[in-house]
Length: 121
Image (cartoon, rainbow, N blue to C red; front, side, top):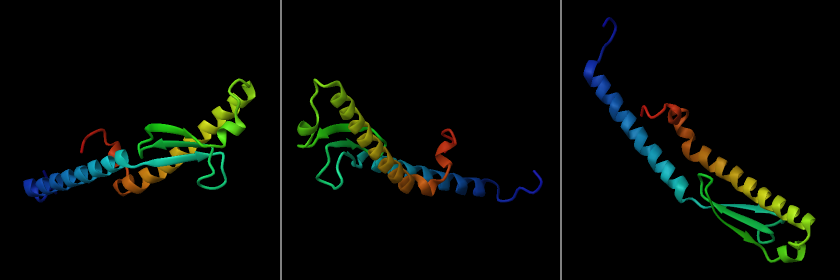
């Protein structure tokens, strides 16, 4: 092959680098799975929320909690109140997703588009 220099040594070095990157990506993925992200809705300040959603950095929802003010706001026999509760839950989920996206970019950003190589690494 004309112009190919380094041969097997260069290829071996590239494979070592790829393996190191794969290990770093695996560590970052594990950190995202262990991370706790909280999504809030219904309150202006932390501790004043009506709905809290617990998820990890990979957007897996682990729980939903209703604050003490929810019982003052929602009568589950009233269709309008149920719709408001649904909106509060969705807002908390979306807040959590936004925070999880930020955490993902922080952890996985250094790897650029490497994760999209279809398992070549």
